[in-house]
Every structure is written in structure tokens, then in C-alpha cells.
Length: 245
Image (cartoon, one colour):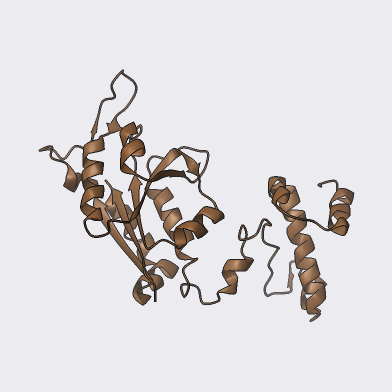
């Protein structure tokens, strides 16, 4: 059995208590598949007030996180796990996607650094971490929520975490298509009925329908993803007829 260890550096350790003690992540930790350790960055500050930020050189609005306590925290963690891959959660980082999640799931140890305030001293990205990752083109108050997103996404890919391993393969973004529509009981809700093909019992027709619906949804919502997919002539024609291909 392989255990993936996350060490998360933050000034708000309390933010992680509930999310990491519920549902899939909680069960993964109980099984020994996931080891999550939270480190309070202020514990690595030599300032008597435990400050970890200061005004930026050259002026500007807000405060910038200091390089020294972050470097000290990383060095301390690496005394136990020297080969840990270290990541700064940053809006200026490379986009996080399912492909990156698969890549990270193959690691044994990951250190996530959560930024705050107006940013982090540039020397952290240049000299203290292996890479910077962004979960989207928007601004959050800090790197804590992005770190949670990375942990959950990567955790789901660890063998044994999900009850049905096929779930990982079928989910959106595990291949270039968004996931097809899903239905459950009741078959008729206020006149909105489950498509007949799904209750037909014909598995070939069901699979064909699911593929078609996945193509339609992807073309409508995320047409950029279709560029990564080899479509049959029939599928290309069908998308053209819908005026979305």
C-alpha cells in the first residue's frame, strides 16, 4: 500500500480541519492512503510578534509575505522528506488540470505553500519551490482553498481511495470530453422524463447515447477540449448539423 503525504504551509491552519476530516479525504486518511500535515507558518517566524509579511520594496498597496519563514518551514519539513516536491499556490502559476493531478498523484511527498496578502516574495518562487500552480484565472484571498482543491483532486487518483476505480476514468476531464448527463429516480419528475434509451436495457445504444451527449455538451460548453480529441467523420458531421462543431 502506498501513502501520499501532503505537508501544507499556511498562516490559517484552522481552515483545513473540517474539509480534511470529511467524506473521501477522511476515509483515505483512515485507510492510511493519505497523510496530511498542516504547518503554521508563524511557527517559523523569528519576529517576536510572529509576523510573516512586510511592506514591498518600491512601494505598492498591501503587504508581501516574507521569504525567510517560508524557506525555514520548507527546510524543516525536508529534513524528514528531502525529496518532497514543493509547490507554491499562486495566481501566477501554471494552470492546474486533470493531467497535472495525475502527475502529482504519482509522487510520494508534496509540500504546498499557501500565499496570502498581496503576494509572496518573488524569491520563494525562484529559489524555494519546484513550481507554482494556479487553479484558475481569478483572485482568491489566499492559497488555502486552492491547496484543498489540489489535495482532493489528487487524492481521488490514488489507488484504493474510490470504491469503484472506473469512476476516475469516466469522470469529466479524465479524457478530453465532459461527462455525459446522469439521471436517477424518479423516471418522471414534473413531466421531465429520463431519456428512454437509458431504461431500454440495450447497453450498446446506451453507450452510443452517452458518447453523443458528451460530445454535444463539450462542444457547447468547452469547444477547446475537442481539439484534443480524434473524432470520427460521423461525429464531425453530427456536430456540424448542430452548428456547434
